[in-house]
Amino acid sequence: MWKEENNSLYKKFEFNNFSEAFAFMTRVAIEAEKMNHHPLWTNVYNRVEIWLSTHDAGDIVTDKDHKLAQKIDALH
Image 1 (cartoon, helix red, strand yellow):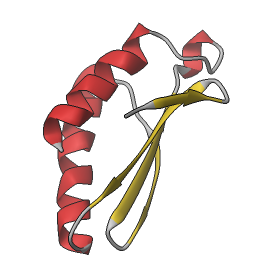
Image 2 (image 1 turned 30 degrees about the vertical axis):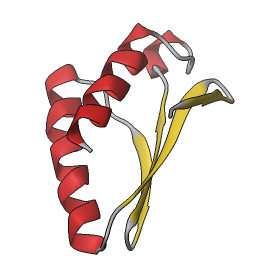
Image 3 (image 1 turned 90 degrees about the vertical axis):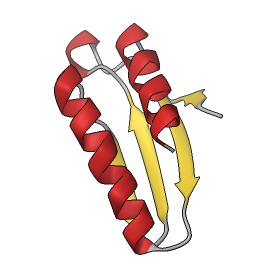
């Protein structure tokens, strides 16, 4: 479940290994590029953490973030 904290949506995803995590990031990158809305994220081995906020709206959570979050959940 996404948590809204510090003016961003946050969620941690865990996978079986690095390859699965990286493949997920690739799928997310394609959707983010289509929306021209790019996440802040980290990846360590099988864990991917994502923070979403809309920079051109003053780094707050907007409908754009919620839409990308839904797309990301569908990819997981």
